[in-house]
Amino acid sequence: ILKLESPQFSLDDVETVIRPPEYQEKNAVVVFADVSNFTAITNNLVKYGDKENEKLGTERLSVELNGYMTRIVSAIIGAGGDVLSFAGDAMVAAFLCSRSVKDENTAGAQRELGNLCNVAIQTCMNIQQNRTIADYH
Image (cartoon, rainbow, N blue to C red):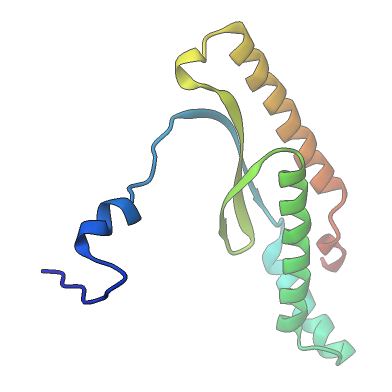
């Protein structure tokens, strides 16, 4: 039994305050990206940090990875995509179709999905060509 004793909130308000998430089916191009050779990069940054004596390797790795992920996120969002999740050195992004799933077999929906594939591929190629964390492996 949940008992809330707050003048600003009562159980009568729960339905209006806490709404279940909306569910929508959408066609999308989904992209999985991670940093190639991340273990080797990590090992080299740790050694590099020790040699340079500026920052510890783990601190340098954190700065480099955060900067790299920021550039990737910016590229994805700039191309019209959305970042859905992060897991360590990896992320999942999606480029959503504007049309509903029930229209997926129309010529316009197929064309839009094809265009989104092209946008996603070009965005990934741009990210790969502009990587800077790779300088450490």
